[in-house]
Image (tube, rainbow, N blue to C red; front, top):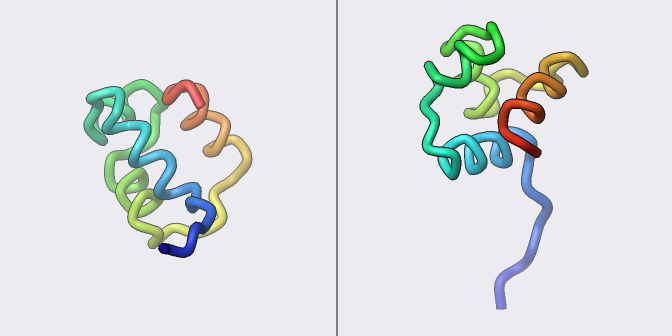
Amino acid sequence: MGVERELLFSEIIKIRRKALDMNLGDLSILKGLSPSFLYRLESGERHQPSVQTVAKNCTSLEI
């Protein structure tokens, strides 16, 4: 049996973006964030995004 763990925010937004068939460019246009910023956020390079950034991504990704 595998050990279950909570998903990280970065994993959640990447999974949801892909489920909606969106690429980083699509999401960046919707929310006014650069594709490179979103990439760093999804890859975990960017830690502790602002509340505003989290809200923007959650709204766009219907989370």
